[in-house]
Image (cartoon, rainbow, N blue to C red; front, top):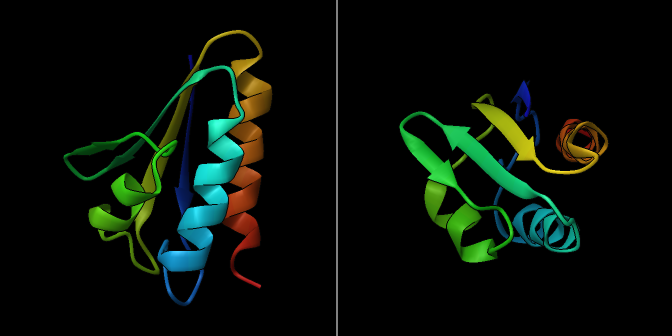
Length: 86
C-alpha cells in the first residue's frame, strides 16, 4: 500500500476545475484510491465526492493507493496536487 501526505496549496483548494481534473486522472487508474481528509475517506474517482469533502487551501490530505504499480499511481496523484499551487 502506498501512503503519502500532501498539503493542498491551490488558492481554491480542491474545488470545481481541480476536482474535475483529479477525478479524471484517478478514474483511469487501475488501483484502489482513497484520499483521507480528517475523518473522511474520499474516493477521488467521483468528482462529487471530492467537492463535498470541502478540501481548502492548506488542508493536509493523505493519498492512499493499493494495487499493481500503486507507488507510481500514488506519486502521480501527489504530483498533480502539488502542481496545483501554480
